[in-house]
Length: 371
Image (cartoon, rainbow, N blue to C red; front, side):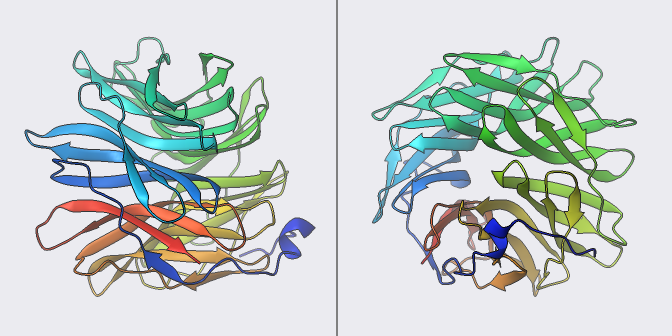
């Protein structure tokens, strides 16, 4: 793969992020049959909010949130429209978070936005694309209490699925039309990162006819598609998350297929173009779902690896020059585990969330912290 020049903010950051991962014990929502965390956002090393979904009896799906105060996780009650789900969260302080997802509205999925104001979660009105048969938000990025951008996908009447985004400007959410690559038969955003209200990058994939990497940028007025090359030999690709420390420094992560297996993927945006990087895959099947880069430069990405037929958590660390695999903690008694998201707010602490499954066949929330 081609080498790239990275900004000094990355090259100069040699102090590694924490390398020892420890399983935490977040409380499971009362009555949950299964549950999973989908996203986490930390404002400091001792202040994080994680969101997700749990299944109650009768196949009812409900949202939940939990807060980390540096020593323990605490459940927070969230509004629960019919069959609801939270996929993304972004916090600008301990008293201001936005979470996004979807809920069932008259037999179709509709966008869901919830706001944490310091004492409680409340729903906010957020539009869905006109004529959408269903729509959902997957991720959100806030740069202030009144400036957020959310990204997701919606279904048209013919069944085709395509990306959309919307922004919060003060108190109102406004829809934005996002372009589709030529020949795309479907597309979806999976992650978004903003360095200001007028500088965001959203990533995901589109189908044409195989799965192809997708990245788009927002300049405050329009969304623009950015070319994203696959690594040499790759035939299918997928971005799961993105983190930008500036308008000229973003990492997007995911996985790609090259005929021999599924491999971890990392690409770097230098302000002009995306370039694949050498990213180690510890097994023949491994992928990355989320990434977090601090303003100091180091980055941590999380996901999964398949070892001896068992899916396990995985993390990788960028030290300014290269990616290396970190050993993550495996919950005791788990048969399957995976990390969906990570948030790092210092060189010392990172928090990652996801799920694990035991012999019962049900999934449970998982949180890990590196220190």
